[in-house]
Amino acid sequence: DAGITQSPRHKVTETGTPVTLRCHQTENHRYMYWYRQDPGHGLRLIHYSYGVKDTDKGEVSDGYSVSRSKTEDFLLTLESATSSQTSVYFCAISGLRGGTGELFFGEGSRLTVL
Amino acid sequence: DAKTTQPTSMDCAEGRAANLPCNHSTISGNEYVYWYRQIHSQGPQYIIHGLKNNETNEMASLIITEDRKSSTLILPHATLRDTAVYYCIAPNDYKLSFGAGTTVTVRA
Image 1 (cartoon, each protein chain N blue to C red):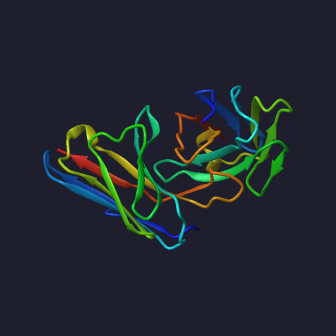
Image 2: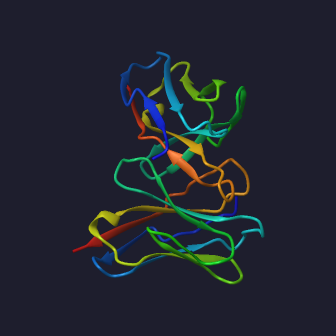
C-alpha cells in the first residue's frame, strides 16, 4: 500500500472557525490532490499540487486554500468553515506509471461543521 | 478529460462474471482509461488501466473496443466483497475528476 496518511481522520468544528487537514506521503511522489465527497456528487477535485509550492485549483476550490512547502505534505485549509463544507475529504498521490491517472488515496477525513 | 458515461447501478450474482460498461466516445488517442473502485466509505482503490490493448491483472480484466470509444471492466468471479462503487475515468491532464460511477451490488 502507498504510504499516505491523513490527519485528523475525524473533526467536528463550528461555523466560522479555521480548519486545516493534513496529507502526508512517504512515496516522494510529485503530484498530490485533495478531493471532497458528498452523497450524489462522487469525488470532486478541490486543489492539486504538481510540486513544492506549485498548486492549482480544481472544480470546487472556492472557500479552500492549500499549501505545499515540502514534497511530503499537502495541507488543505478552510479559512472560515461553513456548514456546506461538511464532507469527507480524500487526499491522493499520483504514481505516474503508464499515464496520468494512477492515484493512491488516503483513508479520508470526515469533517462536520456545525 | 474525456467525458465518461456509466450506468448508475447494476446487480451481479456471486460467483458470476460482472461486466461493467463505460462509454468514452470523446476520448483522444493518448488518453488512457482507468478504473477505480470504492468500497463503502474507504478511499478509492486503483484497479486497472489501458490505452488500446486489453489488460488483465489479479483483480480484473479491461476490454477496450477497437475504436476506443467504450470499455468494459470484467470481474471474473464476483464475490460479496466486490460490492462497491466503480469509477471509469479518462484523464488527459493532472486535473483528475471522478463522476458518480456505477454502484455494483453482488448478491449471494
